[in-house]
Image (cartoon, rainbow, N blue to C red; front, side, top):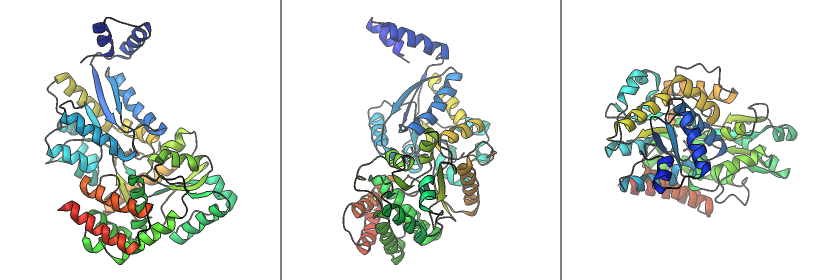
Length: 426
Ligand code: GAL
C-alpha cells in the first residue's frame, strides 16, 4: 500500500512538515499498513467516537486513512460508496446500516468475518435483531458498533426548570410544554428539515400514535391496510401539530445544528436518535444535570433501533484481510463497545456487558434495548435503514418530506404513503 511518505518520495519532494509527521506516524506504528474507512461521522461527538477506533488500530500498528462523507444517516456516503465499488476501488471498510449491509452481501462484495465472530462468541452476545442484519446466509458479514435508538427526546433542563415544565409522559403534555416554551419566546422543537430527519421524527409519531404493533404492521411489514389507515391519518395529524413548534429556519438544517439549539438554550426539545447525546457530551454537559433524555411520550413501551455496521470489502491482499479481521475484532470487543458508546451516545450492541461505565441515559437505554430484544419490541428504524430496503425507505422519505414542506392533508398523505411504498416494492 502506498503511504503519503512513499508518494512524496516518488514525487521527489519531501517537505519538512511531512517528514516530521511521517516519522510521528511511524512511531505510532504503521508497520502493518493502513486501512481506509468510509463513514459519515463528521460531527463533534461522532468524530470523537470514530477516533477511538483509530487509536485502537494504532495500538496494533495499523494506520488510518479516513474517508468521511458528510451527511446525516449516510445518504451521501452510500452514493460515494456505490461509485467507489463501481469503479472497482473499494475502501478497506465502510460504515453502513442494516439493509445496505444485506445488499452488499447479496452482491458478494464482502469479506466473511466468521473466524473473528467465532473467536469473540458473537452468536451468543449480539441480540437476534442485530444478527438478522449482520449475518447473511448464516455467515457474519459485519461488525456491529452499537445500538442506537431513535425514539428519544433531548431537552434543555434549565429551560424546563425556568418554565416549570415537568417531564411529559403523554402526547398532550408534550405538546403543551412546547407551547409554553414558544409563548416564552423560545423554539419548542429544534428541527432539521432534511428528508431523513423528517422521517426520524415521523416514525416517532407513528409509534406514539399507533403503538408497537401498528408500527410493525406499517413500517416493517409494509401492510397497505396499516399504511392507509385511520391510525396513519391520525399520525399525520399529530405530525402537523408537532411541526407548529419548529422555527422558520429549519429547512436544510443539519441534525447537530438542531442539537446545538437545545444545548445553547434556543430550543426546548429535539426528537432525535441518541447520537444527539454525543453532541451534549462533547460540549461537556452531563445527562440529568445539564440536559434531560426521555422516551418520546407515547413510545415508552418500545424501542426503535438502528446499529452502525462495519462491513469489509473483499480483498486479495492478505495484509488487508488481516487488518480487516483485526478491526472487526476490536469493534466487537467488550472494552471497545463500552468506550465507543460512551462517546457516541449509543449503548453497546453486545448484551453481556456491565452498564456501570455508562451514563444515566445510556444505563436506561441499555436495559430498555435488552428488554425490548427479549420481548420482540426492538423494532427497526425506517429512517435509518432497519425497517425496509433503500427503495422503500426513499419512497417514504419523499412522501413525509412533501408533507412537511407543503399543505398536503393527512388523509391524502396516508393514501400517498401506501401507494409510494407499494410502487417501490413492485
Ligand atoms: C445514523 C447513524 C448514526 C449517526 C446518525 C447521524 O444513521 O446510525 O451513527 O451517524 O445517522 O448521522
